[in-house]
Amino acid sequence: MREFYGRPFRVDRRVLVPRPDTEILVEHALELLRGRDLGGRVLDLCTGSGCVAVTLKLERPTLTVDATDLSSEALTVARDNAQRLGAVWNVRFSAGDLFAALPPPRRPYDLVTANPPYIATGEIPGLQPDIRDHEPHLALDGGADGLDLVRRIVDEAPRHLTEGGALAMEIGAGQAEAVAALLVARGFTDVRRIRDYGGHERVVSGRAPRP
Image (cartoon, rainbow, N blue to C red; front, side, top):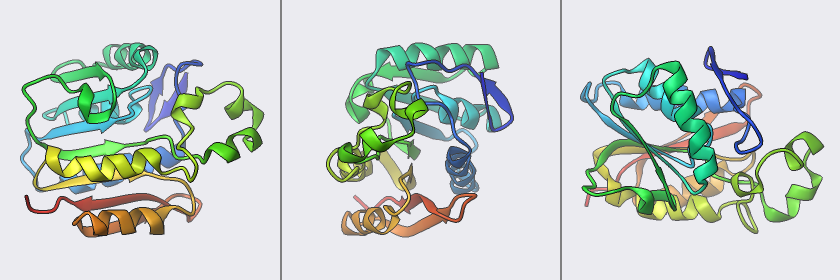
């Protein structure tokens, strides 16, 4: 078990261990949802253990939450956490590649969150052994510069967001400037960079461009 946002999440070698920095993503996501319809819709990409999706649902029970992950094994863990913690009503988990995993009909979301793989491939051998040897590389490896999945999410997200809907992503230390630039280039507005407990810019968000 690992505590996340005050709740015990079950984790094993199939998923990343939830970290305190990811709580910053949850806090910011809840802030972005303030003022939106109480019955809002949220999509959590690369959900892993389900810690973000489940926490958002429990913190705001009227949400409809979809969550996707490329790993069906990770989704087994996520579903177990959702059931054990009581987040099953209007929560759906789908296996597949980012937005493509969503079954029809595909309705737009008020918020898309993501904690994608963001570690550069060449940096993985230098990670601490408890991470490198015991957590799934699929959830760690973000390509040559760590931003392969981030670029895809930024590019595809506007087609899945409501007008004024938001995208919020956890990224690696030192990546915020590059990710913010990607959002601006894609037409996102109100682009923000949020610091973690250690003072690193760890979450980047923006409002969807007009269609």
